[in-house]
Image (cartoon, rainbow over all chains, first blue to last red; front, side, top):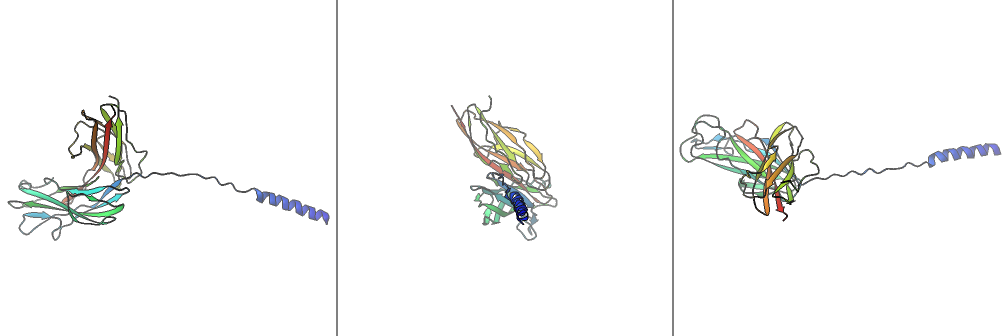
Amino acid sequence: MWKIARMGAVGAALCGGASAARAVDGLVPFNGTILAACVLTVGTPGVLVANGTYTELSSSAGGGLGGIITVLTTGASFKVSALAPSAFTLAPATGNDNVSFAAAYSGSGATTMPNTPGATQTSLGLGVTNVVVNLSATKASGNFVTGNYTATVTVRCE
Amino acid sequence: MAMAAFASATGSAAAQALTPMRGEVRSFTDQFAVRVFPANPYGHRIRIDVHVYDETFAPVQEAQVLPPSATLAPGDSRSVYIVVPFEGHSERKVRICAESVPFGHAATLLRTQVCGRFLATRVQ
């Protein structure tokens, strides 16, 4: 009886010894740095349509489509603007005669922006802002003739 | 004429269009250098041009940009090295802009321009 008890005690001691080997946790640190950045991502380009008298091409007219761009900011103090072109990059021979351009933009999301003249800078909040950019081209004299027209608006974040 | 100072990011993750976007540089020479990292946030390959402008957005013609343009794979970024002379001034503010080449086939194309602002001081 005494022998059996002693063997049990030895067994318990062995088992206890195994369970006494505690797991050791090692801490692996991870570090990361996000720099203040502004990311512009073009969603869809815009579509220009002519008015009834063919003196204006506009993306905000019926059937037109504003360009969509996503602005992501990870830091403060960034501003956005949309710069109108000075001429069409693609147009028929008389397409750039007597034409003036005007860009405008509006936004929603992290920053809510009403319709704003393109050259005006708007401060951006942190996060994602969806911006709609519109462009109009107006002829002071004459009319837009048949052909393909392409203009480029520069969306700037700084 | 060796460059004495750098403004550079320690690294740039994907989906950043340009880092750093603010910086101050001190140089002991008559020019200063900045290293920036334009990045491609899109899911397709794009070409990015890097230009240097002054405070009024007039191009700084004498600035050297290496390389002035690059093709970036989706999510990729690369370093661009810029050297700008002080032109006799003790301080110079420049904008370094990463500009994407417009894409799409619609009537209104959008070009993105992300500009970092840098202040360089010449240490006499």
